[in-house]
Length: 134
Ligand code: THU
Image 1 (cartoon, helix red, strand yellow):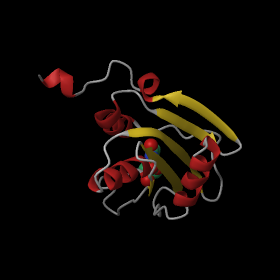
Image 2 (cartoon, rainbow, N blue to C red):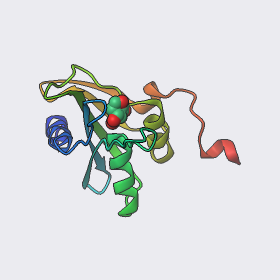
Image 3 (spheres, rainbow, N blue to C red):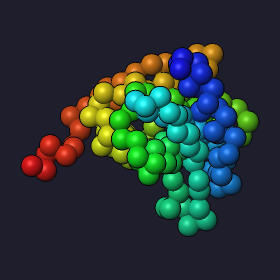
Image 4 (cartoon, rainbow, N blue to C red):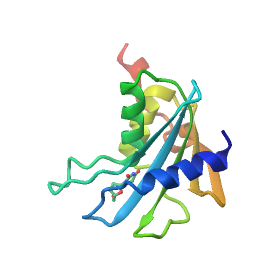
């Protein structure tokens, strides 16, 4: 799976985004260590706070299907039809990703034609995790 292919799967997942309130549509594609890809989109709610981000949709799909180790996640977003040059994951999604990756996750941002590659550890330094609870 190339970075471009994973980004394109995120673009495809974004088509299912349910965002009637913000008009901001996000898609994510999460590559598991098994080689399987779990896609997700944001799902908004009239009560606003139950809204689920695309990244968490993908993580919850994966974990609920038995996969807990991940190689990479691609994230794309933007208003209406338009893709933003870069849509970074929110803080809550960074924390949810860290639960399963301990910072070692490639994060692909931008668009299929202009990918920015970073690491979860760069996006969430000094994170709180399971080792803090022991
Ligand atoms: N959103 C995501 O899906 N992922 C993020 O990391 C940032 C924000 C969604 C939530 C909401 O539906 C819309 O974008 C505007 O915040």
